[in-house]
Length: 242
Length: 220
Image (cartoon, rainbow over all chains, first blue to last red; front, side, top):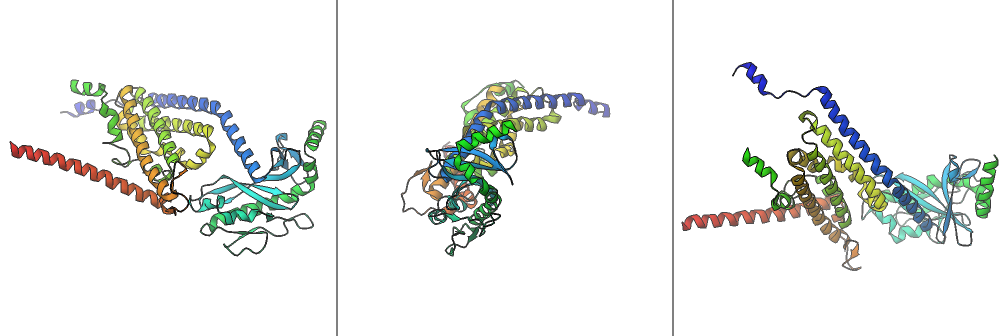
């Protein structure tokens, strides 16, 4: 066999333009399919997210049947759909239209990944009355006991976890901390789940950070929120005028 | 050549069944171990993961089979990965639209279907050489085999680790859950147990076959 014959036996390489063309066509096809499915599923996904948040709000603020969403910054409070920047909060009302509590998001690094929570705040007792997990990847059977452990959940019952502000309304009177299981003495301490200390500490840290951030900003606006419907109409009217 | 062609065209029961049993991707070929161990801690997760993977496998092998004469050899792996990634993204959106809870449970493993070597393996070893019909039947078999294996693990792990099956409490309040079973080590224990069982069954079948052959030879 001569070298020439050997060369002929190797199949000819397709030209670069053919290779690029093939990948281009496949990428276009791929893009088309993804966009198609994205457009079709988006309303369902948004609806699911909204429902999940609503469920969580009603869970952490017992007795609530309606909620209105606001963003608050250092000076003012706006309806959430006004497009302003600030901390998002959900004001939850009962059937009589009275403010039952406030729900807001909190997050901290857990054992596996970031834990995202929604917590309920009761303005009358200035305490945190419960939390709900929006997303977490904690170990099943260990970390996820923060959702079921009765001892842990009782931290937030009667009257609730103390989150009083200093008289100057600038920070919490007592930072929220997680303590070792069985050593809780103060109403602002969280009794950890034994065997799930990292996750319990993450909950404490998330609540402390979120409360320190939100409550001082929220405090001057509580009366507006208590007026509820009326104040929101006022806000919107004010926005339109301004 | 003629024989090859004939073999290529015929779809037999074995085209489907080989994936379920003789070439089971998990118990025989040990492919896609990462999702198998990670999301088989409950029956519902196992089922969802199995179905999602089956869909991606079916759709991507089908497309690869249709495009098999169009894709040059030099860029085939890149093309297969793009095709697989497309269907994984689609599954990701669809699961989010069906249930956010389920989506959060499955976590990153939906996106990681793209790296499941079972799917790329099917594209490379089967779909790129076979007609559409045969590819779809074979992929369905492989997907069913994968789902079956995940369910085998998921049911045992949920039963022992949580005392429930599909969320239904079976043992009552006195059952002390064997928590390690739903933790990662439990995945390895249960997988090891199933592999032991399947290999023992295969071994026994082979031995019986050998013995009958020996007996026939002796008889003759």
